[in-house]
View (cartoon, rainbow, N blue to C red):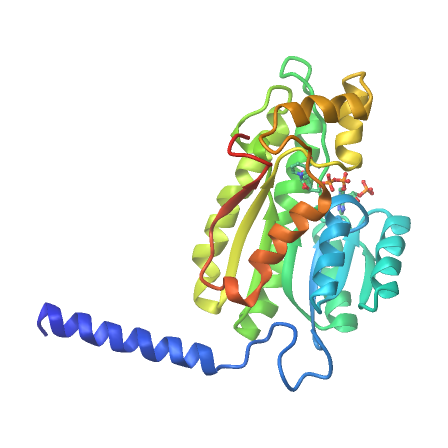
Length: 287
Ligand code: NAP
């Protein structure tokens, strides 16, 4: 075959594949023929009991997904589920430590049984244990690696089989601007950089099954996590917010909804050609 013939054949095959994709039923929410939006399938949001996880769960529920909330804190789970139901959505909470292999397996099975096959996974659960290297402890290192990296690995591995079976899936992982390095966060920076490598590898391995994997890397977002940072630094949250805003191009700190919208972009059906990317959402070009 000549180069031109090979190119033409490839173009024809690509066009045929694109037409087949367009004609195929999309398993995302809102598909015609479903009993309701998102019926029979769900989105799992880890760390959904508060902060960015809660905002993301509410955003996905508003877009028609039944949301399974995984968190350690039952009160936070109840409150997020209540807010979603109040707005007319479907949600259920599951007390799951994402770093515990058995708990993850049981939680994913329970979520699938109650809300349908998980076709969206947002690996958002997180903790901070900041300190400078000379004071940093091995216990804190292990905790950070376990929650962020081991958790994202265990959850992705447990959920991917549902996505592979459906031929459709979305994994969105929470990285951070700290992945680029941040004094006092050797453990967290390393974990958040690791999340980016995991994301790109998931994109490569799972792409052929119609699954995308992307990461959102937030800057400074107003949550309990950053309130704790202010307390640790011995300043009020308002003082910290002022400092952060002055150093941010858009002159404000982020809101959990800012991150939820970025996550929803990656989850959308229209984003099926976006995979393996890291989107910095930090109010400007600098981390
Ligand atoms: P947050 O308010 O502290 O919420 C984190 C949630 O994760 C909490 O509900 C927490 O539960 C839960 N969690 C912790 N360990 C868990 C575990 N082992 N299993 C299940 N759930 C667990 O934090 P956030 O600010 O919303 O942050 C969410 C994500 O964004 C994190 O991955 C964080 O690293 C990332 N991020 C945040 C910022 C920011 O400025 N806020 C910036 C960059 C990246 P408990 O309440 O029981 O502890």
